[in-house]
Image (cartoon, rainbow, N blue to C red; front, side, top):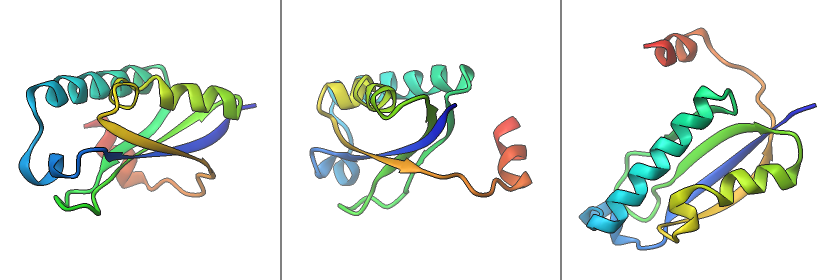
Length: 109
């Protein structure tokens, strides 16, 4: 049976949010986004997004399903931006309690 997990990402270079990404960071962040889109299509990722603040409090989250903590760690560690060191990531067991219709409607576009 699958469990829910959350991983939080934060830039390893604090200026990334305030000053913008370098060309290499931009490329890896695009790969990160494509990775999450693929996992969403595969019904692994339930929700992904980021805060919009541009200081050192900014972060992103990915809420997803995995069979085991080891599998969940693999999902997080295979994120291209995490793998390349653009983001540092932390994994948490997570329990989705409620999902509002508004969120589901927004996700459908």
